[in-house]
Image (tube, rainbow, N blue to C red; front, side, top):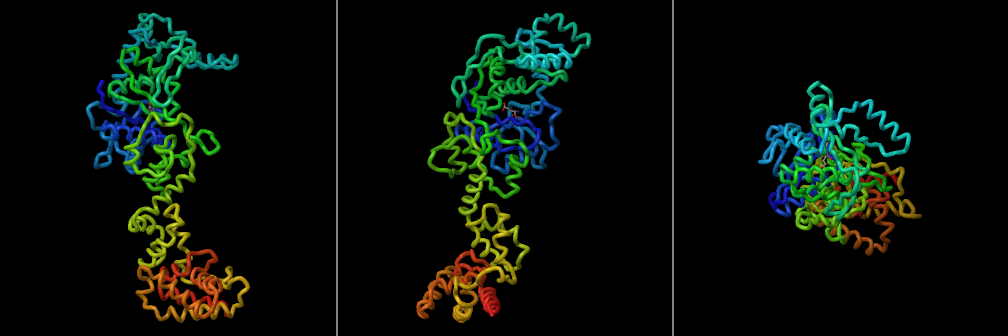
Length: 494
Ligand code: GLU
């Protein structure tokens, strides 16, 4: 056993990386990085019936997009092929099958496991009986007493078997968990777990436990759903006289109504969030706070800060609510705080077919930035700005009870003034402030009101009753478009 922190993320490639898996991966990575340890990616593919084509590649690729890369274990090489690196391999669990079988045999010899020959029919019958009489459904231990010699004879004769743990049937075991402290389990409620299936493959319990030992894993950080299995895993460690790793079981993820987060792929696949336009930084920040907050008084943390502040012992025991509004809020934050160029690069692809004037497009996108949650929303938010002709029939260009003639008078005067501004000055940095000063000056000189001048101007420019200020709109639209819109509004008012 080394003193080094060696942690592993050990997904089964049965689908896609989901939000819960990402949190597990992240917490492992945070601990490894903070302690200068190793972050290992091990793929647990021993359940051959549940493998999904491309599942491994998808997990590794998604982790990489999220900025999470294991420094040991499975990775994708330059050609996108699944490869391994590190001295504790193989890291693809199915390739350790022989080792697992040896461990299982050793456990049988030590009297810590036994061959079970019960047929699927018998087990089914047993289950039905137990259910009918309201007892917990578990194996009744029929084969526990078969002497090893007899078992070996039956195997030699070709009889089918599985190997089960020979767990204590009474007493208690107290396990220690970094997050939960001492937890006591009652042996009488724990089933003699199958560790080798009839196809010769190990189950998760044997494979993960033996691999954790062989890979010198220092901390096992995984979801709470594995907590009930902990006594079985500790039993295996104890049987061999191995020192177990430290265990940390992360809180469940819950829906807003506190039901267990549904695993329907569209709700939880990290890939889908990326496709929708959530930023990796926002997702990492969000996922990190599912069950932990480094300070408790703020919500925004960079990946580096998370690494520096991570403390496994401070993770909550209670379930963590998956709050999509918070993810939206974080995404808005990250979209607003990134450099302009980076923001434009993200959102421009959604609207670039709408105009050839790139300067105009960028100005529009920057104007709506404060309202963008997801880059694709830029389409809707810039639609009126990018329109060739506005439809004034559904809006009030006039201010409250203002007569049309008065609105036309105000618009015409402003237009006259704007016509004297040079094209380039119109869109220059700070133009909006100039417009504000000049137009307000005009209003004062004429003795008009702000509302009866600025409302018609704003609606004329935006085609909307709710919109940014007329000064911003002028700068964003530029001279030609602004004058054309004011003219169109005057025309409309007749
Ligand atoms: N293969 C298990 C899973 O996908 C890993 C559990 C563990 O980390 O021990 O949930």
